[in-house]
Length: 279
Image 1 (cartoon, rainbow, N blue to C red):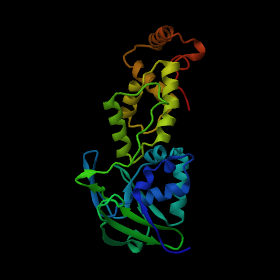
Image 2: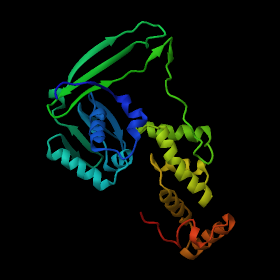
Image 3: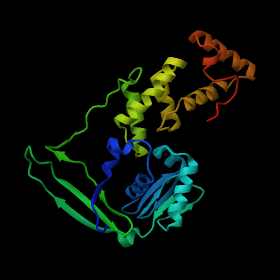
Image 4: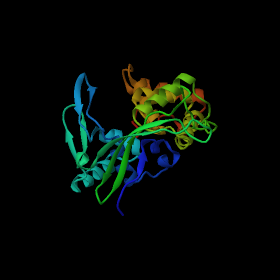
């Protein structure tokens, strides 16, 4: 099969894209969509780094969180792409670079101005910078989207998210902070994500007495776009242990909190005495 299709970056905002398990095909398309269509600069650890056309900076940790894979699976996938001459990986003391091979050769940039009439049956004007590729093995037309504007206002076509699966809805600011975290990490905040988080948040609230606001705060502080029960428990354990002279003092705090919450030994918040919970 030859040729190409228009593929908007907004595809990653659709609930289908967030369905699990995340496939290798989706992961490859992600890399294509994330690649710079023009050179740019970014500040990392106080230093300016140059990101060339066809490049991106992504660590294994970031990719494992976005794709919900183990770091080992991410590493093997990137190595397979490199072996097939689809990408080149480079690392320095600041970050990791992923370069799409033959990006300049196959990306034919064209500016299109598509204007539709302003009627109930038509959308507002779109201006897209299109980049197309046809390698013979895989095809994509990488579209840089601009926001749709109508009468000077942003069009909102998304339906409201349903938080009924959460034990309680977080404060407006906490939720806004978490949404911004996922936006920066280019991870869509879909209904599937909300429902998946709801199971963990309910467990943390019901079985461990940890509120939704507490959990969301930890996610924002740690830069987590995903959420697992043991992540939160380990983080709380690590934070609470600071300032204690010995594990006996800390274990006493754990027992006191368990007693307040009415949790027995089998439901101990931290799964044992001064032991880090393993995956």
